[in-house]
Amino acid sequence: MSTQPDTTDTDVTILGGGLAGLTLAIQLRRQDPALRVTVIERNAHPVREAAFKVGESTVEIGAHYFAHVLGLRDHLDRAQVRKFGFRFFFSEGRMDVDRCTELGVSKLLPTPSWQIDRGRFENFLGKRALALGVDFRDAAIVRAVELGEGDDAHRVAFERDGTQQALSSRWVVDASGRAALLKRKLGLAQDNDHDANAAWWRVEGRIDPNTWSDDPQWLARCTPPDRWRSTNHMCGPGYWFWLIPLASGAHSLGIVCDGKAHPLETMNTHDKAMAWLREHQPRVAASLEQPGHEVCDFRFMRHFSHGCTQVFGNRWALTGEAGLFLDPFYSPGSDFIAISNTYICDLVARDRAGRNWTSYAEIYQQLYFSFYETTMTLFQDQYALFGDAQVMPVKIIWDYTFYWALLAPAFFSGRIADVAMFGRLREQFERGSTLNASMQALLREWGERNAGRALPIDSRLLDQYHIDWFHELNRALSDQLDDDAFATRITGNVARMGWLAAEILARARGEHADIGDHGLDALLADADAPPSLSAPWYASAA
Figure 1 (cartoon, rainbow, N blue to C red):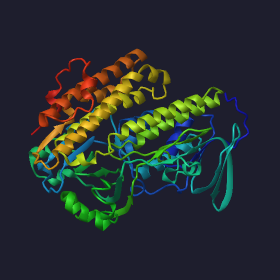
Figure 2: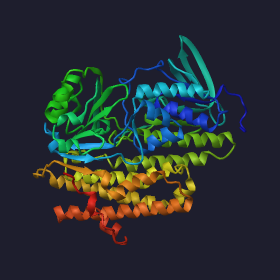
Figure 3: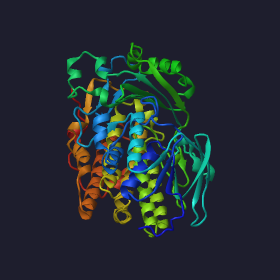
Figure 4: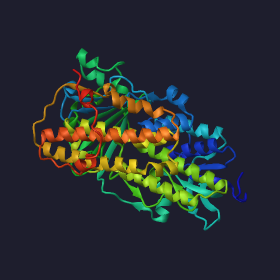
């Protein structure tokens, strides 16, 4: 029962009815069916499928959020594409992709994720929100936001159907994407030093990597032969290129690159992007030049990564790209929507129940920013590694392990807002973050020392499915544990990170005896002796 006087038009006004705004509206109504939620969205619904927005690939946290927290598993299975994991080809300048190092899975890992056709999904989310009683006002343009002082209501002025309208509400949430209405109004923008750019487009028809070879052995590596369902990454020095299938029958494509190594001006039109592909990924370019792949759209963005100085304030919040955005590699966008939306839902519930919410807003913001800063280390200053078929597979295994060891279990277990548990496990999370920072520095130096060396390029599959402990980390995300068992699990996961760090350091020293340890020796000095991880985590399959 609310302790606040009912003097507003709505309880929560959400600015933006895209992925972040509509999922928040659904989560709020599922949490409290009596809560009045209004969404103001600029685009008219239904929106176009396929050529609409990027951000189609989900990973474990975002997928779990959509499927289970929001209860959308049936739609995902029925109307979207089940993802066949991440897949990486180290194929710079090569037509013979089947003779390059490939990293991926031969079979599906236990925890599911999906490729999301954003137009189809957001149309579905709009209908689901309406069915749950959300006041969804599409084709509406926000003209002004006035934030109330103290306990005063906020006011949002907008235009719809040619008329000027206004709403008062106790909470207002900016989910307007890069329009960032509140961020701009409050001067909260924060640049970062991750200098990366992107160009992307959609084409009609399916791009199937299995058509790139007639080698029966290569084709038989995956069962079923569904490489096309993966988020396929074509990797080279300073860049990666994505291929993501959409359920509407189109394929999403994108170049993401270090701005210094590959200037945006070399790819900021479709003709330039295709010329760039012919040079760097000719096998993909040849596929796209076949009949049946008409271009649906084309866009580009300079320096897409950004931070924010504040995301939770006096009964206002930012979520999605209106707040911060990291990098599309590893597809963390929906993960951070899931986390911020869950924090917002908890704050609204606390306020509605007349409980303390302001101190929790500060704690959640600290946690959210710490997740952002720690995850940023995976991308910033690491793009030079992307073409290194020796170091990059090691980095990918490490990055996955870090993600599945700490942040993913916290969300899957419903403990992402459990302040007491984060306090209990503070030392473990800090140790995991410190190990990761040191490892990223080690990997970066390893790659720098490899620069200019002739590294072997061979036809091998580094099969993540058959790494037993790695497979188990993925499976264990769905375990239901009590608090003590969860704390034990996290402690064990961090120990495994230490064992893996020790092995990677040993491998790096085997290549470069005088490579820096970047603090790892001290971090690992008191660790238990590691189990044997050597087989088969870095083994190749013919």
